[in-house]
Length: 112
Image 1 (cartoon, rainbow, N blue to C red):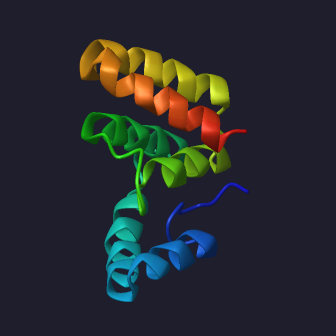
Image 2 (tube, one colour):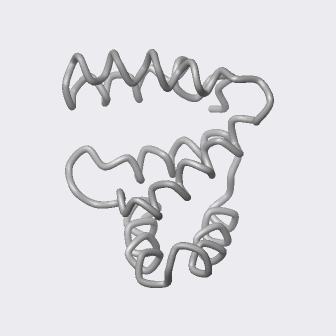
């Protein structure tokens, strides 16, 4: 399901954020929702950007990690597995091969 605002319109995402911590969930929903509501960059591009940031920050493992949520968000906004894989390959050059390797492993687990 494609959302107009990938944070404010996704009730399942909000529920997952609140489960991490209620105050955290509320804060992230309000602040990220506002950022995702900015009009000039489309939702799919923003979702792909968040995946790139996860790669650079190495946020693809452990409890509460955002990588899986951002992959699902990108898919909901129309990104394909192939686009996400190409993004990861592109990031090898700028973020590092070792950082991307773990992300491919996690991506494969998410998309089983």
